[in-house]
Picture 1 (cartoon, protein in one colour):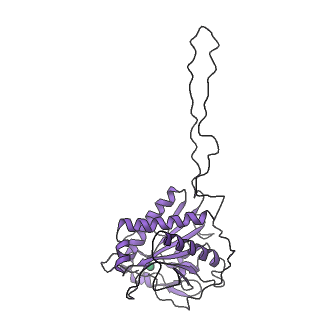
Picture 2 (cartoon, rainbow, N blue to C red):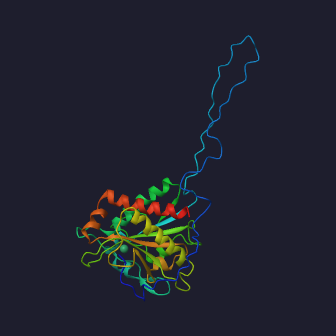
Picture 3 (cartoon, rainbow, N blue to C red):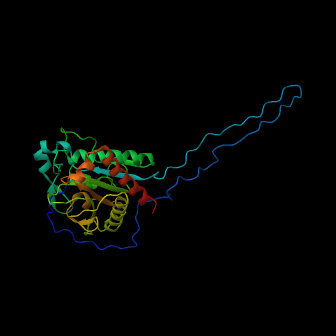
Length: 295
Ligand code: ZN
């Protein structure tokens, strides 16, 4: 859940349809590439030069198998699991103001929860970890913005989340970032997911607004294909554009924030609190990233 905006929002940024994602990379395709060399080679030994000696039996020597390059090799992804389980225990730290892209905003919030008490921080953490595993299998390098889901920890603040993966930051520069959240709307019947892209806002997000919106549309499309309903209560057709989020404003790589559903809705909550449901969310995110990388 993202707190109420502090600056005007929901102005849909101008989009250049031809804007190419800067995501990738060298010809990633849906299917693994052919290996550079033949996986096996038959070798027939020469007959022994001595006619007295028994002939060496024919043998097949198999060369070492060279694995095909995985489809997301070389891709670096930042996954940002929203909030931290211990944020409620550190109010001073969490409420301290940080830069959120030309204006100040609290470091973080506690996030929301289902009516049954399942916290957003735990949901986002578990979805991020499954997504990380799926992306690892495809060859991607995945960085998480927090290393635990703990009642004894807080943060990181939104400025740190926004800067993660940027050029010049500690660690590798990432190709893209997905910030994972869930909403907590009390609007009756409100349910479904939406994907938030940054508004083009000089000088903060003019560089990433177009590729981030394109990324948001791919994530939206894949989630719809996977059977998830778009939000009934915010955005348009599963997409929202905002200027008030430090996580988006401070990014210099294509970045979206996903609100995977409304934790206060019984249907969405049922998915979020089940292992199979979380795996489905994670699978959709990983598939989105794979599709993006193939463009
Ligand atoms: Zn949240």
